[in-house]
Length: 293
Ligand code: SF4
Image 1: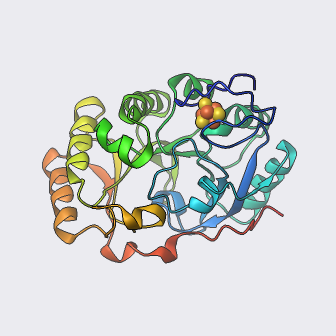
Image 2: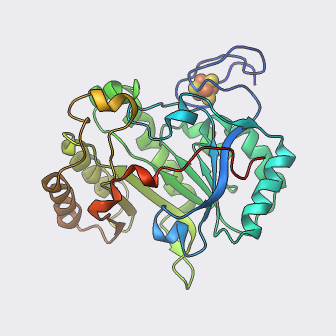
């Protein structure tokens, strides 16, 4: 992978050598956990769980990341393409409704090769921060059934402050449009389990509801009101964020009501909202190589 430009960081390093870019990853796929996960949206987790495969490293590294141990710390174990395919098999045998690739961006070229060979009997979910290059997404066309991107920030000052990525929205907005072009709106089966389509996640940040309002307006103007939006209130101060105001506290009830009102007033027809008790650290998975060894 000479001169890696897989994501918008466009580091240009040769990951086959000792050189590392912003994501801190080499050429071989590295994962920290592969297990059934029950805390995604109901159409993803269903009753059996989502087959979540957590990739080590991250091209974004938000200050409030709840997966800090793997995103910044790089915890995980390298797996070969064949081992990863066997891990997919195991998750499907356990009853997973889908294979949920969590933060896969920096391994997209490797996953492209694997998914071309692996004939999954369940949908493949691409679960991403949204900080993606359109070229990389185009290379995955036909291999991904469900795109599950975050849309985190609208303003460059905010994305620079929390993710060192002033160009976040410039890339994420184009990425979401490309994902929509590839898979269109969410389609579910008779049991309400997602089979194909786009679900946009937005985590409302305390003291930053203006970002939520701008993003909801952008989605309504540039996609459609049938777009499925998951409006998340589960923010919990974590890692560095415990010392950064105003994200050193949970979201207030008033802030969530403002976001919810905007969602309703704009006329969105499909979406998910969360109860207050979702804002708890116990929903953060344990990264202990479960399902990897
Ligand atoms: S995938 Fe990693 S090395 Fe490649 S451009 Fe992105 S951050 Fe840099």
